[in-house]
Image (cartoon, rainbow, N blue to C red; front, side, top):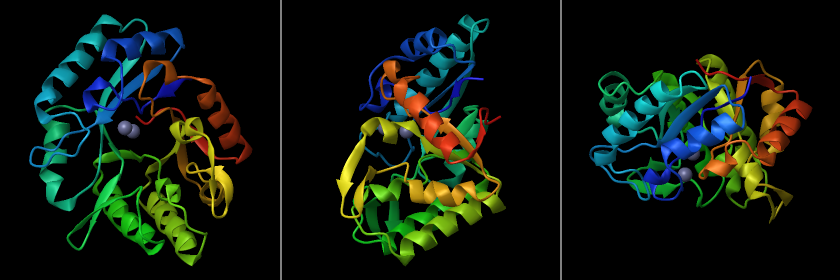
Length: 257
Ligand SMILES: [Zn+2]
Ligand SMILES: [Zn+2]
């Protein structure tokens, strides 16, 4: 079974391609299920670059239209990738019930620490990994989200592995076990290639050290493309991600529903 549940569109302003371009490419690459998960908008706060809230209905309408038009060729699901902030709980509920979004993906690209707004890609030190984990875990508990996207994204930061890193992995892994939440092995990290870090040349994510720990536990793992262009729906980096995940002996699943 071939699936991808992490797909962006031009609407987020940092990806290219319309919904239909992604559907045609997914059919071309023989996908059984294509899930759209563009960066979702909040009503009361604008993260840039993101889909504006005013685009949400059109996005969902387009997906519904394509779902019907191509139902004999591919199964299409509507989703959104979002950060978790406890004060926005009602908005996630509305998305799932009022707007009938079929799934939400937890992608904690930003978080708050006291009142500071923090970019997960630019952290001061490894103690901040634990702050990211704290909020991500709060989100994992809610039941709003089907999977945690690139759970190991903090390793994009250039710090040596230390006891906070081990603690970080344990926190996320234990939460995934406790709440039976799927973790995503993100092919976009593989696509971005290896880079030089102070602890060696490696992918920013997926970080092998994290996934070796995941492999020891009974945790469901989904591989997604996280494509920001239709041509990346199923490229050689998806195949490479499958190879790497199989070498790690991860418990791969292919459907989040
Ligand atoms: Zn993006
Ligand atoms: Zn994404």
